[in-house]
Each structure stands twice: as structure tokens, then as C-alpha cells.
Image (cartoon, rainbow over all chains, first blue to last red; front, side, top):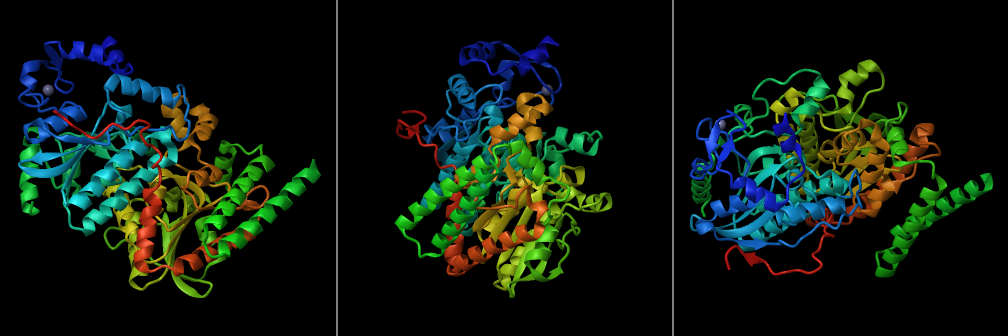
Length: 280
Length: 328
Ligand SMILES: [Zn+2]
């Protein structure tokens, strides 16, 4: 029981997290095996026993994805100005400040440009630990600007999604980011510039129902939860248990919603090959 | 007291007339400023004149059992309606209705979500919650309108897209996403009116318009107040606080630029006089269409994309540092 409690506790400051990751062992969430942390490095946080894909921070993703781990980050200072002055049990402004202090990030997405397999590509990666990777105005603005840079410089775009959907604390403005981003994607589509959408665990709600499903290629990591409505909402609505595997990558592939499921270790090579096909 | 209310109502009407006259003038900087000032006074007055109407009251009004539904607005505002069915892929979704019609004699496409009145209709209409086939049908009708250069009128009254097994299997998210992208490119005027509930992505999935109007007591939100209370307060009974915090009322959304105009409702809500409500909707749509018809197809697409591009651009760094390399 104590273990579960710990997992649900609010995000811990960076100091504590570092200490924790300095531990030698990690338990796999899926097969419950105790794993030697060093064994997870070559697989990039994938369980060697059962193929479970652990969550990865946006920063680690980018470092792993770009050639030599080098990239240029854009709009890193964009910060939410709390447009609704939202307060629930805690003021959103305070929640943001705490998150920012804990993560060293201003919001739930990194926007970057660099070389991938020698090709210049814009890549956006979402940060799952930042208010559930939720999409508010900053995420919307950063992606839209990334698309506008792609349009201007004729670069391909890759978005690595990991998000619980639109951010409640920015209300209907979060919802409008779906329209803002897809409007920009429409232009990219018309200009025939490639966009690869990579879905990781989890990708749900307004993120799935906007840019995540609009790639020229929609690909996903194995076992990722991908859907519009969350499983709990569906269970409450239909008052029955959901079948095992429902809304997982393999389920979506079967139902025609994904082009491919790609192992984390193969992701970069897959994207490079696709970009070559697209003429880049 | 009664006199005060009567005076306020007179002033509201006076302001509305002034605003309407100003919007008919050719656009100018001064005119825009005056217009904004008038609108702000009107919003303030409306809040004052019905202080007892909290956000949560409005949500309840938007769900009132006798509130006019989309089908009612189609019948009251349009003529010659011929419904069209099916998405040509899987099914016809009774939660999404639409078809050919005439607006003041002009051929158009009209569509929207339909809730159903009695139990049998409600079940048939799935309580107004569309499935992927509904969104795909809506897009099909919009592209039909585009092909024959007809304006599109959209009415929204839905708690949201249906969260069910089949809906997920058939790609609810993909269907909504496609609509968002394709609606951005429509070359004909698109006028959206939120008449009741504007439930999140399920509403936005048919909500990309050149103009977005909203009835006074409708709401439009990223999540239902109930859902928000359950998640953020961990307590479903805190709906009133959630409704307030989410800023979901017509005047809030107009202030945020998400809604272009608020269409006034009769005293006590639209259900007290559906005819008068429909007349107000009609006036607003007529005015909106007239303005949009002066734009070329390219201008329409450009202006529509700019309209949504500007939403939530407020977050500027106070002290920007330059974009940085990961390794200097
Ligand atoms: Zn494992």
C-alpha cells in the first residue's frame, strides 16, 4: 500500500528525484521484475523482460533523438499568464510555479530544431510529468510556432505526444489550442511538408483529437494508451468493464488508426527512413 | 426595484441597437474602439441586471428540458429544410442532423447536434452526443456546401462527443481532428452558433467558424463542471465552484475572444420565448453572413485561420532569453 501512496504523491523536487534515480534498482510496472538500472540504459527505459516502455522526460527524448544529442531549443521562456486566474484547491499560478521549480521547465513541451540522420527537423516533445503533460496556451503556442518555422524553412515536423489532453486550468482557451494547431497543420498539409506524429503512453483527449491523429504517419510506441475519452469516463458511461488491451497501441493498429507500432529503440531510424521517402 | 430593472432592460436594448448600427458602418479604428466600449458596458449591465444568475445557473438553463433544440432553430430560422443522412463510411448518426435549406431564400447547408425531447427520442439521438460517423457526416455536408459555393450554418448543443467502445474503435479522436483541419480550409462562409451546451472537443469538432456566436445562457467549456469538480476538487458536489473557475459563460468567452457575439435571450431563458430567441439568432446570422459575403474565398480561409491563431497568444515572456542550443 505504501508504494502506491508514494506514486500518487505530488511531484517531488528535483533534488529528491535525482537521489531516487541514483538508486541501482527499478521495479517494472508491468511484469513487477526488479531491474538493474544499468540494463535499462541501452534499451532507453524499456524493460528487457517484458518490453514495457517506461515514461521518458521530454529532455531525454530530444537528446536521444537528435544526432549527437545536439539541438536548438525554441521559445523556452514562454510561460502561462494564468488567463482565467484559476483556483481550485490550490491557485493554478502556484501550481505552475511549483511545477516549474521542480522540473526546470516552463511548461509541458520542448520545441527544438536539429539534425536527425543528417536532416534538419523540427521536433516537439511533451513532458508527461508537467501537469500530466496537459496542453494549455503555452503548448499550443509553441507547437504552432514550430509549425510556422517548418513552413518558413521547409522543414519536416515530428511531434512526440505524451499527454492527458487539454489543460482544465486554462479553460476554453486550452480547447482553442486544438483549433490553432490544426489550422497551422492544415497549411503544412497543403504545402506538402511532412509531419510524423509519434504517440506514447498516454496520449488522450484533446491532444489525440487534434494534432496527434493528423500525421502523414501516425505511429506509436508499444502498449501506449491512446484514445479520445479516458477509460474511466467510458466505463462510467457504459457501466461495464472495458476489455483488456482496449485503447492500447495494438488495439488502435488493429482498428486502422495507426500506420505502425515502433519500438523505442527503432524510432529514430524509422523516422529517418520515412523522411527519405518523403524526399528529405 | 422593479423600475430599476425596467430601466436597465431599456438601456440594454438601447446599447444593443447602438452596437448593431455601429457594426453596419464601414470599419474604422475609432468605430472599433467605440464598439468595444459599448460592448463592455453591455456585458457589465447584463451581469448586473441578473446577478442571481451564476455560471452554474446558466449551465442548468442551457440544459433546461424545454430549451429550444437545434432542430427547433432549424425550423424557426430556415425554410425548405431537407435532411441528408449518413457518412458514406459506416452509418447515419442521429445525434448529428443536417441538410439543405434556405436562409432568407438563399440555399445553404445547416447542421448541428440534436438532443431529443422525450425518452425515446433521447435514446435515438444518443442524448445529442455524436459518434465518429456524426463528425464525418458533418464534414461531408460541409464539403458539399463548399463544392456548390453555399454558406454553412452550424448549431451546437452537445454535452460532448460520445465516450463509448464503438466510438473509440472507429476513431472518435481522428474524426474530430480531421474536422478541425478541414474546416480551417473551407472556402465558404461558416457561421457557428452555440445554442445550449458547448461540450469540449465534441463541440469544437463542428465549431471552427468565421463567426462564433453564443446564446446568452449557453456555455462552452473544455470539460463539464461535473467532470472538473470530480478531477480537481475530487468532489462532484463542487460543481458551482468548478463552473465559476472555468469561465464558461457567454460574457466570459466573448471577453476572451473565443465568441464574437452574444445573442440575448428573453427574460428567464430561451425556453420562455423560442420565437423571440430564434428571431434574435436570425438577426445575428443575417448580419454575419452579409459581412462574410464581401470576402473572397482566400480571405475567408486566411481570416478564419487568423481568428483562431490569435487565441491564447497572451503568454509572452516578461524577460525573454534567446533561443538556446542544448550544448553551447
Ligand atoms: Zn517488465
